[in-house]
Image (tube, rainbow, N blue to C red):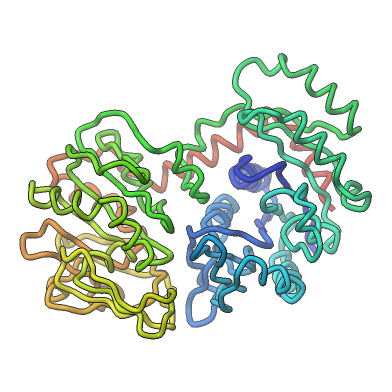
Length: 488
């Protein structure tokens, strides 16, 4: 079995995903065969790993990114349990890449003992042939109300015998209390698994926190492995957690404004990252309660974990009227996956796959209709744009099929099959292809059609460069020798 190390956080969004990715790249740069692992993830940003059944299985986008940092193909075993929230109290449960059902939050707690078997099975598979596995926790081990049957943090660490380094986020404040408080409330067996801590997202002169480190050491006896500054390169990486959308509400004024309504069950919003990387494009995520900006040249309806629920939510915000105004004014619209389904005349769910609402009127911007089906399409896809005759790259994760007259003008050919639809005037486009804007040549041609010149010729290269920059920063600011030698 490979040596292993686990990063757990004092809370959510403390930067664990980026730190694991950076440490994976640092270990790879040292010549180690390294792999990522996250026992349980909760995210509607999913990726496709090719080793799943029937040609593809779902994992969190964070583990996809970490696999990229390791220089290895993503595997369903890197994230054996993925929860995709559909409502405020229930989620779709993905086990080793495949949909295993749905569970309400309270019911899910009773499922955890059964899921631990899948977690440990995947854990053994991930470690095969590796020198090092870097594990990412979920949430915080301080959530002791969830400790019974835990599979995400200390429940896994104690079963697998993996040492833990705690991550505290100084940017949000209260980092001393969060680390000391975690030490105080952990049971003895869990506390013994913690080898030390690190501080993340520090701004300014690190020496000003010397007294803080001394205080934490005095209360806990834990070793500090370093203080990581605010990593500006992290903004060039795909984001996994929708909490970051709160920080992407507005941007700098640029040649093209792209408006993206923040749907209540928004999914795979990293589809917008290649556009955000363009120097001439301003991507504005519009929060609930605000109108879509009238000066937007393009509106993108992103993916959704609950198409019908988000259609109703969209109307509650008045965004349907904003869209109609936008189109009448000559604006363009792109719908991706669930956003594509919303653009049609109607969405039907005869089997109640998404919930109790069996049918709802669509936005009517494309002459198509969608019928939800229980079987999910999950695959990486080879595609080509029909509009610009350029290659596309991406993947599909969706329920349902879409048909109608506008499908006679497909937006893409995916694996030799027509996909999506384009309106007769060419200003409204729908597609099931996630990653629609990733291919550099297509993105350049698309932006040119809107009167904007692309300034990013290698988006994937930018992501790779960001991973290298983060790895270099971690080598400078953390005691990586001690961290990697800690693994057992």
